[in-house]
Length: 130
Image (cartoon, rainbow, N blue to C red):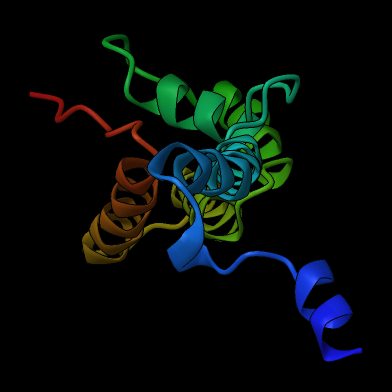
């Protein structure tokens, strides 16, 4: 009886040929790699609107006060929380500063730095304006 069980037992890894080991390894690793790559890349996903906000603020032409509501909407629609938070806060502050006299400008610098760091994390650095 034990001879029949031994005959039905699958061979161990040590008894397999090198080619069989490579085939088994490839069969295990390939799906894992595909899951990893497809999990990172979103092939059919539309571009994030927050990235469009970063691009709008880093353009070479000056953003006018009337453009900030559109830019704020772009940041508000971002799927990334850091862009959404920093972008909407900066656009709100820029809108407030049009009518808020007596500020030293430091608050705007701090908000811009936070937004610049968030845009840079998503490969859309804000260009320094001269």
